[in-house]
Amino acid sequence: MTPASFSPTGIRFENIDKRYGGLYALRRVSLEVPAGECVAFAGRNGSGKTTLLRIAARLARPSSGTVNFLNGSGEKLATPPPAGFVAHATMVYDELTAEENMLLFARLQGIAKPTARAETLLAEVGLLERRNSLVRTFSRGMRQRVAIARALLNEPAVILLDEPTTGLDPQGTSWFAQTVRQLRDSGRTVLMSLHGESEVSTLATRAIRLDAGAVVADTRTGANFRSILAFANA
Amino acid sequence: MALLSNTAVLLGKELRTEFRSRELLTTTVVFILTIVVLFSFTFDPSVNESRRFGPGLLWLAFLFAASLMLQPCFLREQTNDTLSALRLSVNDPFAIFLAKLAANTLFLLLTQVLLLPVFSILYNVPVLGAFPQLILVMFMGSLGLSVTGTALSAISAQARMRELLLPLLLLPLLTPVLIASTEATASLLVLNPIMPWKWLGFLLGFDVVFLTALWLFGEYLLEE
Image (cartoon, rainbow over all chains, first blue to last red; front, side, top):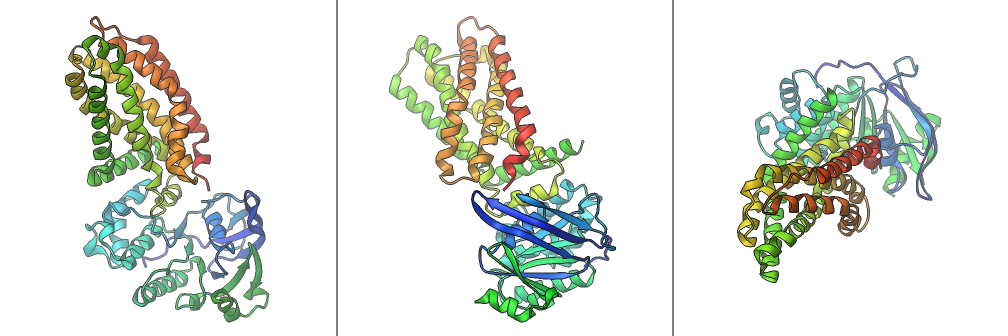
């Protein structure tokens, strides 16, 4: 990964509720993730992992409660910093080439020298030679590489990964784990939702289990790391 | 300025993806040609009947074509959740709407320009005499169809039975545009065409009202 040019950023969720009609996706979720921490969220389908990450990315608004971003000293930031979001869906256009996708999002984000930035990131994810190929001709693993490159365009200090390894083969998962390790080691805050133990989950410095929209276990409060992830597998 | 530059970038993306896939334009042009040809076979109208009923048939065909064209407008952003990527990238979500409605207006206008000579031949109604005025009416009408249709497409894309929902919401809401566009077109297809300022003013008012509503509330339409 390119040398970090971001400020360490943490995130604090306070009493977050998210309702869809009468259904609670999240119930009174309160937790603080200090800058530089790598957190794995585990839980069954529908436990609220995706909703929490989408609220952190400001793609969804909580029904009540607040989300604050914190600087390295734990003080609240006035303006939320950009967050990099990678999900199971690639969030890139199949009808555009890898480079066209990167340039599109770089220009929308007002990045200086978008072509150079796009090429640097495509080189980092090993797709520079295929930059002029349409994304629809890519394998699942290659698409996810474009997704990672897109998410890193604006040097985000917070990376949100929503079940990013779903559908990846072992080789793709290994590459992804290596990338997450680099992101974590560069000082970025990483929040990821996972389905059970994997090469990626071993990189987490903290694990949190969600059940029916509520936090039910957290390694910070003494829960066992492996039991949280093993439970999600059950 | 960020709004305009983001809109321009997104419009470029809309045009590039459409001209690369040619999904919307091809389908819409074929659909609208079929309707106009079928109408002409069904009614076999005389010149006077064509002048009287032609504009209505023409705009009904445009309306059906618009409901077909506008459906995938936000639906295709769901395939790879690209709408989320756009929302994370733009400062003002109105840019997403502006780009989509500009692209939709352009595609509709292109379809109409292609259809006009066919209509003229099949219905024996000369259109060359008032061609620039017709283009203006078609632009205003297309803008009205696109503004409303783009907003409703964003709503229906997140709903169940979305394929049914858009036409059900769109067709009644576009009745004023249909009436004004038909009347304006009819004024230009008579023997001595007159510029339909009253109907153009009505279309302008409709476009401004819906564009303002979209600017004010568009952000909420994109929320989960």
